[in-house]
Amino acid sequence: MSEEKRRLTLHILSDSVGETADTVAHIIAIQFPQFHWDYVSTTMIDSVELLREAVYPHRGSPDYVFVYTFTSPVLREEMINLCHPEAEGGPAYSIDVLGGGLDLISDHTGEPPTGMVGMLHRVDGRYFNRIAAMEFAVSHDDGQLPEGLADADIVLIGVSRTSKTPLSMYLAHRGLKTANIPITLETEPPKQLFEVESSKIFGLMTGMETLTKVRQERMADIGTYVPSYADPNYVQKEFDYARKLMRQLGALIINTENRAIESVAQEILVHLKPTMRNPLNR
Image (cartoon, rainbow, N blue to C red):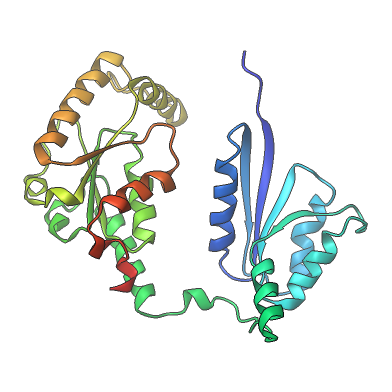
């Protein structure tokens, strides 16, 4: 029996939506796969009292780390106090995502930061492009609305449980209109797929043993049994059919086995046309 992984917690704190801290937290966790990571978020913190309420219960715990982005000088100062080695109740262990950069620029220029919250998410053209891409990804998830494939920046295809949906949402957050189409032995792919420019189509594949295990775990999670879904012979037939279809479409085949979504997305971005790599600048 394998040894159980040590559990660590990353708690995101922010006086805004916490997106930056959340991204950093996940990047950190990816670098340490030997641990089991739990995530907690407390965002839109607008007072010292709310900050203390989030931090106090976890002071002195080496398995509990805060990842924070505070533009408010008051909240940053309070967090620094809470992390002091001699803080009452024990120090809070933390990572200050913005602090070093703010201090460096301020010291170098002699100008203080504005302390304004949420400036990255101001309502402008970039914001609306991102929202449009995310709405597109949701409405074109899992083969929905195939008549809209012509408007997609990226079309992901693959058999079930190859990370099509989470990858679609990640790319959409980058401003790319992403659709995904499941490949099954029982259903013909939509005719519109064959009209999409091949440079926009990416085929997702993983290891057969990994996929079989993931499907078994999925059935256990939802408490049901689907005949053949995790049967190795059936999975192999699906793989063979998927590869044939991907080659027919001229899709770039990408292996997603044991890879983070960010890594797979980066590979896709590298192969996109240069004009498509920065959609938020359109």
